[in-house]
Every structure is written in structure tokens, then in C-alpha cells.
Length: 264
Image 1 (tube, rainbow, N blue to C red):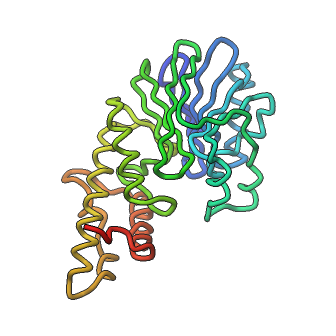
Image 2: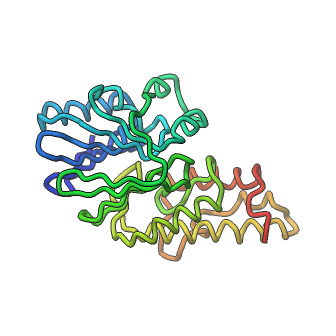
């Protein structure tokens, strides 16, 4: 597990499985976690780090969305109160890539959010807001004192993932994130990045729309869209990562299967 100290009382923990992360906000002897790792092994490492290394207790766990690759630690902290959006169950049951081990990560939340909630924890005020993009249960968290915007999986690197959503819903979610005007963003996988990723993802969505319509109007037909490289859908100077390329290829297939971008 990678431990990244963001502030004296704020840590980002990145697991080995899927690089799913968990963020620890510390207040005296208690911890508030955002998300809970992607595997039992990573979750156990997280538990030991909090309880043995820090000698603290997890009091709350906020779930940015209820897919199993972010829930592994929930059952390791039975005294913690779990917070999620009220659509959490629809999200969990819609998951396509979920092993039997990952299904066992499920735990019912105790507090359900509909639209928004302000949560004071230590020196931080967490402005939690419903931001349905990647899933219908996705929550964003604006942490102004840390200049940090937590976005769930509404960003995948510099792109978005369409499998559980629509272009329109993701575009609206990105617009909400952009309006927060933070300089640092944190997805539920990997490390903190520049908020420029939000604009890059908006550019990516526009590029997909343009290329889809061009492919449908071409002699080769819409199947030619499958040949569109990710590099051509990103702003100039933004490199495409292998991780992003996997989800870009899935996006192209999803566009054809679900007939996205069919209106002018």
C-alpha cells in the first residue's frame, strides 16, 4: 500500500488491486475514510495501518459510489458508520465485473444522502454533493481547506467511462466538478492530479461525439469508429496511458451498442 501524506491530518492510501484508494481524514483519535480499497488484502493492510501504526479508530466511511472495488474495508470496521447515496443498491446490483469475493464486500450504509450534506471533521468541512455521472449513486466531495475535489470515478485519468452511464449525464457531472474551481482532483483510483483532467475529459467527450457522427456519415460506416485512437480524442500534449486506452476501447464499443450521439 502506498501512503501519501497530503497534510499532517490527511493521508491518501493507494492499494495494489486496481490502484483503488482510500483517503483518511484524522481528527484526534478518530478517522473518517473516503472509500475502502478494492481487495481484502489491501483493506487489511489499511486496517493495520490505521489501528496499529496510527493507533486510531475509524468512525465514518463515506462511499463515493457503491461498486465493489471501493468497498473492501467496510466490514473490517464494524463500529464505523457508513455513508452513501440513497441509490447505492441500484449501483451495486448493476455492476458487471464483480467476483464472488468482491460481492462479499457489501455492507448496508447507515446514513443515506439524497442531494447534499456538509460534514465537519477536524479542521475540514467536507461538502458532499450528489453528482450522478459514472453511476447514479456517485457523490462528489469538495474539501476547500485542502484545495481538493474528490470525484469518485467520474474521471478515469483524463477520460470518462460510459459503460454505466450516458454522455449527457457525464457531461453534466464534469460541469459540476469544473464549477468547484479546485486545483487538485482525486479519483477513486490512483493519486492526486491536476484539475486540468476535468477539462481534458470534457474535450474527450466532445471528440467522441464528433468522431462518432463523422464515422456514421463516412463510406466506411460507424464500425470505423472502433479504429479511433485515444490520442486523437485528447487535447494536444496530453499523453494517453495504457490504463486509459483500455477504457477508451470499451467506450467505443459501448457507443455502437447503445447508439450514443445519435442526435444533432
